[in-house]
Image (tube, rainbow, N blue to C red):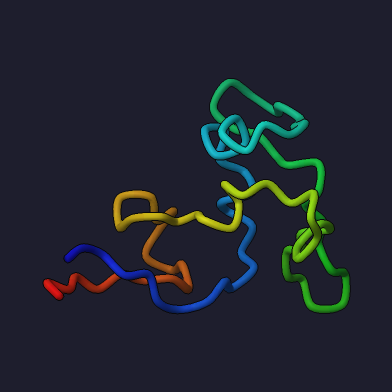
Length: 89
């Protein structure tokens, strides 16, 4: 019984700029203002314009990054490729 996450990452990079996620992930970050942060592992593919995690799929990628979003409340916006369904089984 609970929420099940479905969908896939659209590489928008919005979660890679969430200060609270970066603090939870416990890796170095570059603070660009009081409200925003950018992960040092975030890059933009010049060909596609997509955001790319340089440590995606590697052992040094923090667990918190792979678990985000963990609930409907943690979605960055309605354009996220992930969505949740509630199941009572």
